Amino acid sequence: MNQSSVLSARSIYKSYHKDKIEVPVLRGVDVDFDPGVVTALVGRSGSGKSTLMHLLATLDRPDKGEVYFRGQRIDDAPRARRDAFRNQDIGIIFQFYHLLPELSALENVLAPTMISCSVWNYFTHRKEVRLRAEAMLDRVGLLHRAKHKPSEMSGGEMQRTAIARALMTDPSLLLADEPTGNLDTETGRDILKLLSQLNQDDGLTIVMITHDDSIAAGADICHRMKDGMLESAGEFANSSEPIRTSSPALSAA
Image: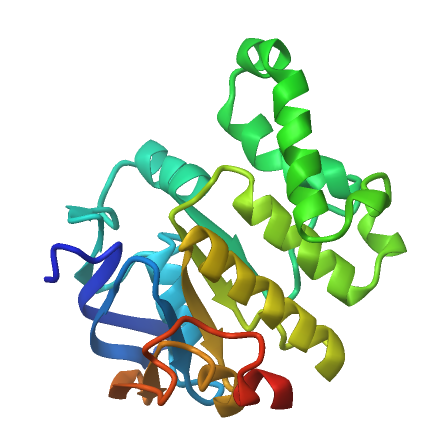
């Protein structure tokens, strides 16, 4: 295992069962994600990339294998530690946003902090927490939509809200599962530019799941998945620099 990696997986196997039939999804995956690097996991539907992301995020457990965060095993940690890992150490954004429909954009961004704090701690620090949530919305260009609920927002606005929510606890790593997959081309390009800027300005480590080679080509490193295994891994031509918003790959996305 690369001790400098933010997140690592070792010999990951995962199968699902349908009636009495076992369906292998991951067949021994080894991968490291280094700090400040944008990594793409690319592959067709069914290749196992989203399952791998769920295991990396400890949303599910591997049948065999180990997941490490900053050199410490996390997949077999007690539930409270795994919950804290997802709430504080990493940010997760999904293709379908997963915003709470009854909450405003601001309240959705506040949710991770409200979950992690005791009632007393939250009310003691509620002013500074709210200011941070507003700052996160402002950063993604949505402060003017703070009071709007998801049903009143476009797909791009919902995804930006989800990104602001993922950044609320200042994570060291962002996991993005098809972040542009439910968006039109122009809006998707805007989301990629936003992720690019977060990587460049903050050095945020990003792992992005995608089926689109043109999007993957904008990453520093690409791991291609096929039939539950890493088929190949390599650096793209622009790997000496993080994702650039002027990248031909992103312009074509």
